[in-house]
Amino acid sequence: EAPVTLPDHFLWGVSTSAFQIEGAFAAAGRQPSTWDAFPAFGGHDASVACDHYHRYREDVDLMRDLGVGAYRFSISWPRVLAGDLAFYDRLVDELLSAGIAPVATLYHWDTPQAVEDDGGWLDRDTAQRFASYAGVVAERLADRVAMWVPVNEPAMVTLLGYATGQHAPGKALLYDALPTAHHLNLGHGLAVQALRAAGVRAVGTANNHTPAWPASEADADAAGAYSDLHNWLYADPVLAGRYPDSLVDRLPVRDGDLDVISAPLDFYGVNYYNPTRLRAPSEGNPLPFELVDIDEYPRTGFGWPVVPAGLTEVVSLLKDRFVDIPPVYVTESGCSYPHTPQDTDRIAYLEGHVDAALAAGVRGYFVWSLIDNFEWDSGYSQRFGLVHVDHGTQQRTPRASYHWYRERIAR
Ligand code: FCB
Image 1 (spheres, rainbow, N blue to C red):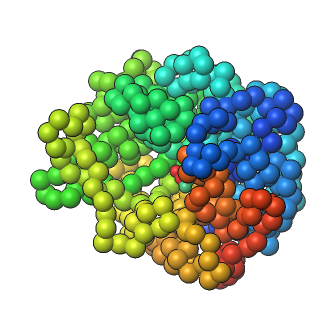
Image 2: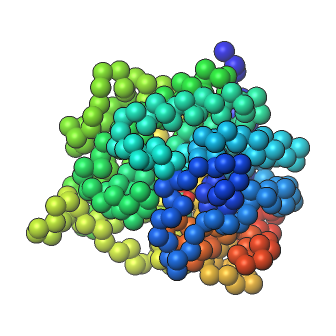
């Protein structure tokens, strides 16, 4: 068995995902994904995005100058279905020659349309198909990728993709979306098996976590119900081999599934953006909670409250709930703001969250994102980059926050 070789120093990184930056929809026979024609703000689409598929060398140069130790990117399932692994070969080699550890996510929401047409994550077989794909990628890259993440934020796929329909594939099934959660978890577990079989170095997660705050003492149950749906539906099976009591009866779990899902991991990746406030539902609401605005903090361009202490809270909740949690990494943290030369708000956001991550004793911190990119249904309207991208000319310009992060890393 290959030894687990997590880097032994604090890992400073940046994150992106394939669909949000690559463009090149038709290159090397890439197949369509569920997101290709999904409606986004202003009629935007990702067919060009940041043209990273052709400009990856320039983007790796930006990372080298930034001084990051790791780059978390994702691999496009629709490209690999078409047999295109060469692009990721080139990217990984470029990273290694820049001294940057490649951290590969296998599924960051760009489901092949052909898989969706067969039922997507509502269908149990998708978990198996995902694992086969994971095996193909690992055969090719196991020797060079430092850390692997099978599924990015399964919670958002279930909640936004299948429960509310805000994201592709746009299904608004409410509670009938819950089978997708189990199939995503099973996909994680089966992919971990496939990755281990190929001898990868380290495998973990990138699960989205939010502290669920009750609006008042009377709203504790509402907050608990929401936390089960957002946090524990994914963390519990992976880290403890069980499902929350409130949800287990709605999940199509078969004998042995939880053993597959709870196989030991080398790290636990947390994506953190903001806390969530909940109150008891008003009459006629079919859900056991209602979202309440958090208005006593500054907000990002998206309107998300800026709460670094929420990151501390997430990490301590996890450490309390799971005695055997593997080393924790912050696999995404960042904010969108309209572009300004001083970039003051983004720097303040990152300063607060980097400090919180260090105080919480995590092993690494990955900024979302290296460059402005296609922010799903919001198109190009939300700028998350340390580097400004002119989406007309593809010109990259490092922001003040990029220079701030470079100095923070060097310190
Ligand atoms: C996360 C996603 C990432 C990006 C950021 C802003 O939930 O993983 O792709 O959209 O939010």
